[in-house]
Length: 277
Picture (tube, rainbow, N blue to C red):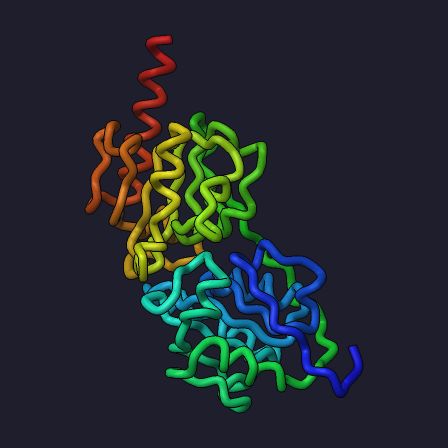
């Protein structure tokens, strides 16, 4: 790209759903603005990024990635979860309004109250920079090793074939990507937990739940104010359920319970089925 050319503005439903084309671009993506998502953006070499604030939530985790990127000189901002659907890049650039911006973004005129489309245009003035890739971050943790095992995965993008039939507590939001049911979960887990991202406009933060019901997977979301989004161990250790799908409810799980209770009930139900089989 020649220095007199502005970087392109790209949209993506998740920072995990974009590749090498993100390098040097302004990426408006439907991911939360937490540290793990920001790490992935930095790893891609974006010129600037716009995320969803995911309700901000516990310890301001939904926008913690903005400060992380500021340390690397990357302009970054977040749109309000009540202005555009999380997990939907096209909706963010169409309806999103900026609620938070880091210092490099503010310097470029990207500030709270600005429409996402205008903010993205302002971020195109970001100076190109050759940056070292960020240090690798561990994102997968085995919390319970006895079957059915429990995995804590900071991003649902880390779900793999090896997690089939396990319980996965993710740090991801509970929204479908671009509204597509096939994005609810990569494999047929025994059960899954997500962050509700403040639930947000069109209840976008909980749309994975009915899609997983259709696949026979018990699932729930924890309140963004109870657990740090992007931090799967916080989902399990701190999370309080706000929504559960029918499959989970049939096991006796309900909103207001803790994520720990969700896991314990799912594990007991699985053990009982195995005992009877």
